[in-house]
Length: 556
Image (tube, rainbow, N blue to C red):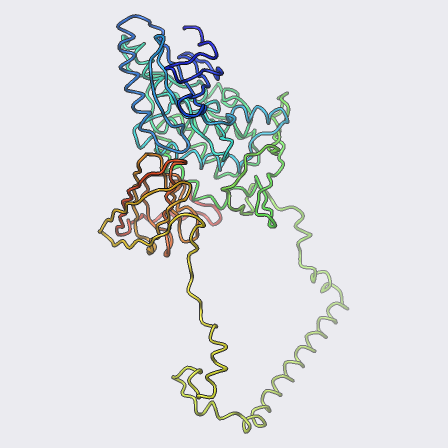
């Protein structure tokens, strides 16, 4: 491999190298200043094939440009934007947006110094925030191949996980180097994180990325390397003992993602998201407690005790440097069969001890007799009241027709009745955002519409649709310049699902009746235009699920 580029070097008469961020078998990553864009920081990724022959370099260039074009098509706010690619000094470079923050690996390392790891609540939120990213690239036919704590950054400005270091270009370079071999697969990926089919045959599928994501989540919660969480004799995962307080349904989801056989796993990120939604009310009860005064979560302290015979230092899931849980809405307290209720004798009826004594029985009998006397007295009073009160009863009851409202009894009652008129319900109103334009759209079943308009950062554009429950909504957003995204909010002001935020296309059945909001968020600093396609169709029939035991949600 060629030596690193000296710091201060100006590439393409534009990119000034300021720091080496990392190095691997395929090249290096540099932090650079884009002098052509107000010295904005960017990332230069260098790819340097081992074969330096003329023919190999020619093929490498062709393959590199093809793969770079694939990266250029990815447009997601949690993936650094591709900017350019070029060749200089017989090296191939990619230019990408710089995501400032700490990797998951660095964040976990900092916590381990204080004997803490990620809580279950944080792990669930992390998984929910990563699934839309994988769904986006998988829909484009792109497999990342190299998901691990080193390749996910918690971005400083919003704490969202950002996926970096795509293996698609690495795969292209590797494929060039093994092109003379019989197999055509490539073995990009980290041992312990990549599944067996990827490391052994080079084949990778959408659920290969899901496998690696599940390993990442397990490592975040246990603080241990993957190889220490696998039973070498059976090659099965043995990670549960390091997270003893984990919610059973969340463990079941992770175990399915970690299945050795690809066809035994979830087949898509959408399936994982649906499984998480089905148990969302149960996640967090053992890992966090709700603060009713602020609505924020305080992670519960839980010491992770190593198995008998282990000399490792015990860890705690208490988090002093936790990523803000801005998207976790609630914690639901449940009693699981895994946690038996103690001190049942303290919960017995206090009257039981009193009734076991003679004087206690006498007191209770006296109270019962007094209650019976009061009941008989009230009944006797009610029987004598009508004869004395019937004569002075107002005649309004005789002149008022039972079929007319009370407000129409007489003209003299009009004024006082007007002062009590506000008892009728006030129509609900939708609060518009403080900035940006808002417009109502009328769309009918089977009649798609196209809405075009301008975008003016940082103001979002809000489009409102009044739709009934059960109908299927499909939305597709294109913008010029590219980069605008949309959020689809249900009448309860929450995203319809995890895929309905920061997306450019969404389709699904509507869970509620009422006003749905499509918020179009422009690319920061770029004034442009948008085109939104909206279609509504009849409800999609859903098969009835098999009844689950009471208290346990169905997990797919």
